[in-house]
Length: 363
Image 1 (cartoon, helix red, strand yellow):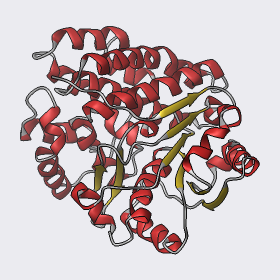
Image 2 (cartoon, rainbow, N blue to C red):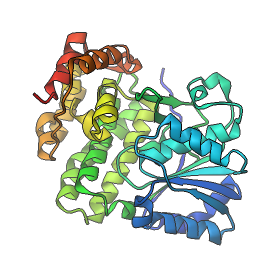
Image 3 (cartoon, one colour):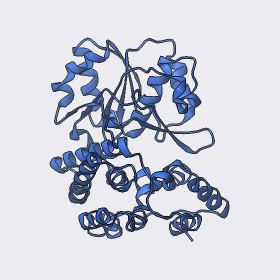
Image 4 (cartoon, rainbow, N blue to C red):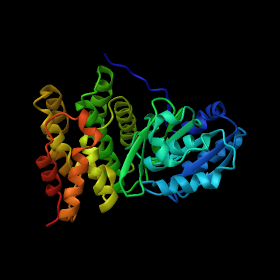
């Protein structure tokens, strides 16, 4: 048996906010916009959004201090600032961080007796404010998933989701907003999307429908990530990357991610390696381990990318970090017990996990 549920209405294309802005009215008359400090101002998305909201009579307030890798502390601060306000919906504008933050805030503003830790117990809430997601990077796919990843008070990344409430109601995807991404961010977010597509394709939870999306996403990324790294102004290739990211998000909304994400989290949280890079550095072994169980799928991945390790090298992925013995032991232990492992094909022993960290260790 398999099932499929993806309730987000997606608008894709140039000036889609302007062309389909009336859709915001379906969510209410007052919005809280969550975004980062600079990017949405620099790429024009914030101006486009606020202009359309004002034109259609939707009031809005702006919080523009969402940090990269949003933390429990950030969520608490936002809730404290706006708990006495009244909003009909929440908009996450930017990369994965604002969108993930929007999902947390949508639940907590609707359920004022809850705290951020309660997000991880879905039995404690059955309603949330509607969410609109507007990605300005081509990578996380958070605009079409129910997942939100926050950094807890101990510094570890923890994902929460609700099967219905934390899916965005609306998503607007305009590749123009990705044109000024730096080379490093273009690579990292593109590799994040690739990991979503490959991990979902090889996941034990994969379905016929998720495989369709995954294969197209992998194909698009293989063709277009090298192109946008070579020519950042190539709008058509940027559009293809944004589409690939969205498709890969649809994949993991059904399959979730696998051990590659669990392996990558400490590199991001404690070593400041961008999430996509931190995850992709383990992708070749994820594929290799799956070859015994799903050889046909592995053959597709390898042929599409012309060898996984070589593709990663060709787009400039290079991760080396200092890791001490205490970190090595702690990270290995956490990954060995991560929930991601149940959907991962292959045999990821404690020895293999430790080896994977040693492989990126700077000697």
